Image (tube, rainbow over all chains, first blue to last red; front, top):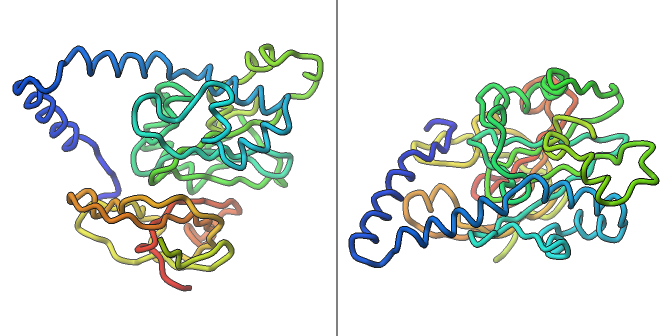
Length: 196
Length: 88
């Protein structure tokens, strides 16, 4: 079949189901809206910025984050659930030798609770199709030129897991506080389409 | 849940192009890669889209770009259900 897992048929089914549950008095539509609004309110890239900054200042946290991100996130009061289904998170670390970049080639899977709603380009066919086959060129279009010696690892969030990149800590930031470091992190840095 | 593959094992992905929903992208069909880790046990997406819940081991499988596209020096890692994989 097609290479998409297009969600429109399922979205239609969800709407029908929602209407049926409301009709039978099993679901209060305000209740559903409240849950969704609360989730959207908590889902912000500021969460991801805090995670990166903590990992830069606390090597033990960084190690736990890279080993099992779902277990490390609650240390910052965060989770991959947000009241909805808990998703497995992999945090992948940029080093001098390796640069990571994330994509979902089948649709637009994204760590919403840590990064907020995804940017439009992340969902575009152009990004999804090209970053897997020509990542170096795509990153250059984002203004990120990597040394030839830096290997690129692309992570396709094609199934149940979500990914976040841990960028390299910028040079000359030894004296900054954790909060000041968090302010330096960018959403694209956490996707891997920019350095920090 | 028994695990057929271990980290470091070489695997080959299925060449089947099913007429139903699947999470094995076209670009990774019939390709050889290396298991780099386990990614939990999840209902096989191909069946859950048909209303059948069949939990199965998912693997993180890394492919060389050259194997996938015939060019490039990067890698691509995917999460693949056991049904998508066979021994190399």
